[in-house]
Length: 73
Image (tube, rainbow, N blue to C red; front, side, top):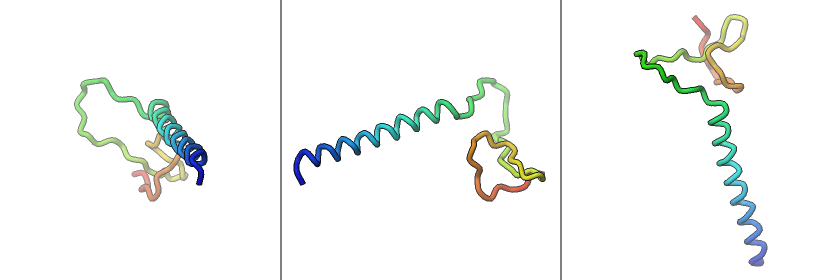
């Protein structure tokens, strides 16, 4: 292996790592649920994702779906 091959491979690896970090930061900023700014007391229990009787998902804002979610009550 030549030094130029090592430099090319290292630069590609570094580029992939930087691109992964940037895309993760973008996704977190773009699609994360907003933080509540109200001072209303909560009990800490958020509604969890569940499957409705017609097969649709409730309480799940993301496009992917958690596996083995319970049926809605």
